[in-house]
Image (cartoon, rainbow, N blue to C red):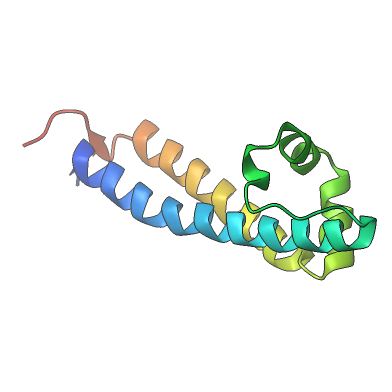
Length: 102
């Protein structure tokens, strides 16, 4: 059984979009906690700050998430995102996705 590329992209985007949104909400809660802990001013536009972008990619972000109480949600979101990416690659490489719409 093969599915069309359009269906594949639709399904992956319908699964991936809530994961990205959940990750942004979780990161926002962690940023609020870190700002409160360090006495920094919280900005709603933290996502566009190079400081916060760099800080979220460092491994210390997981320590901050654990201190804020958001480690398990963050780890679950990352694990789900890895499952979506790996599953998508396996489906595509396994021939379940037809590049030509029928």
